[in-house]
Length: 84
Picture 1 (cartoon, rainbow, N blue to C red):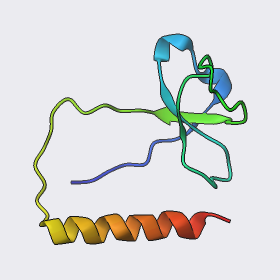
Picture 2 (picture 1 turned 120 degrees about the vertical axis):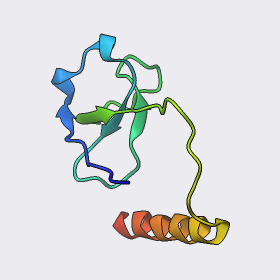
Picture 3 (picture 1 turned 90 degrees about the vertical axis):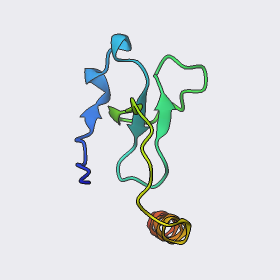
Picture 4 (picture 1 turned 120 degrees about the horizontal axis):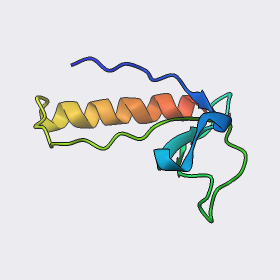
């Protein structure tokens, strides 16, 4: 399975008909905000967005529980290493 990285689009290209998105501030120093600029808790400083994709189906994992746990821990380590 391959995953492509989406390109972040600027705030001014978003329209309310597009719905909720993942919102980013660059450089990335925190997780994205999920929602729209019209939300009451919109932080106001995010400048770019990427699609928030909801899966159509639920797949089954090909990994064992130990492999999933190890991958999850590794991703947490990577995310924490990027924080200031």
